[in-house]
Length: 636
Picture 1 (tube, rainbow, N blue to C red):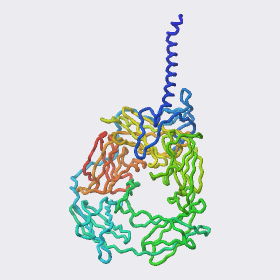
Picture 2 (picture 1 turned 30 degrees about the vertical axis):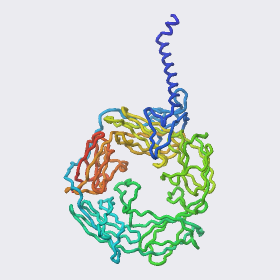
Picture 3 (picture 1 turned 90 degrees about the vertical axis):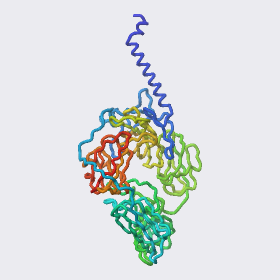
Picture 4 (picture 1 turned 60 degrees about the horizontal axis):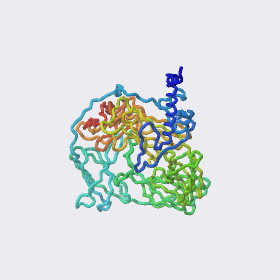
């Protein structure tokens, strides 16, 4: 056979093609590794730049690694002993989500769903949806005259209005009273629905007073009078000492006055996030905190309201040990005395002072490395609390050494950002005098997998974008966010390299894109050096569900709780309790992130039994659409 014929033979051509493909793949692989991108993935990814989510940057030549990571429950979620990718390159490992090799037959990542029909709900209890015409605009009112014991009208009284929410007790109504014209010390709450209400006085220099009233019908109006008595004050002498009898030179005190607690966040099965904003009249009186030098014998004098229970907490440091004590007192007239023994905080015990003891000023010098080598840092700062957006930049910077001069001793949080990892490195540090630290940052590999629910369509306009928020130590103040795109795909993933530590990972819909329903919304994990963690989220088109919970005559039922779920009543897992939402004081319930398709809507208005909601409805919610059930009867 001629040489030319041999070169044109099928076996030779096949071998040549395979060699060419291998070389091409190797070149593409290296190009992909070296190309700058905020996160590594098989699709479009963008770094979100908002007030909190800034940072990130390209990843270049990140090293591979080995080691196993475990999730918070102790289950193995990844095997770091995979070796390197084909082509001999050890960086930016991209593990196939469907890969089940080298993982004990269980698979590292959850299976990816395939397109198909929409889900079918399991059979369960379903109640008939009964609707009635709701009451028109609320027309009830409560008028309150506020005076002192001498009959003087008080024009600047602070009042709070609560509504009875059945088993949830009293819940605040977000409304401030109006001053009645030409009526000094008279206040009026208007546009109220029928129901049971409570008026409370929040004036700090007067004893707490309250009055309850029931508005029985539409248009009802009640007139009340609150007579406020000035507080009497007594002096309490606290004698503080450590267990060995030695007394502290200085203590930090926290005074928490009772009787004005806000119960807005309370629920049958957990607490609801009501936000951090506190408005006048909400019923919240924050604790008073201050430092004070002790007098002879470790004595501290505190003036407190007579007959009113007050919780007093003390904190002091001796050496590097924090000591605490808590005392509850109800002062009497005149002078009273209390003995207080300061005890060391137990290992692992949570403390909300962490700044007790004498105020000293020191210096913090930190040298940072990444994987034992000098790294690039775009921003390094310290924060007094991890949940505070304010921070301090270094006084001086020299390469990878950062120095802060003149900072108060105590606990600080170091936050470092680098183009070499996607989430900020966060480390709690204790500053005492001149503190010098050398910290080496080690990383692990996180894969966030977004699976489209079976049969779920793309938005009719726009894209199916989703957002991943990485929250070191669970804090939104240091989170970083990245957008992914599920448009036209059944599954998508983003790979991150993050410093070792504890994280919450939240997946949600970005602004200005079609709303998506995500399950679960948030997951937590602990990353270790060279660890591999995979978190899977199911994403479906969201729908908006609206209804107003009312009784049989159309009067609203305040603060009902409701759950949108795929499980039938009596078989809803405990983990779903975190998804329970609470309606408003006027019975309005609305969520824009309900999963589309057939769902169960469970409502608790009187029942406190997780397995027996008062009402269970089955609703088919349109993808990216809105369903308004109207005024739904949930009580007779």
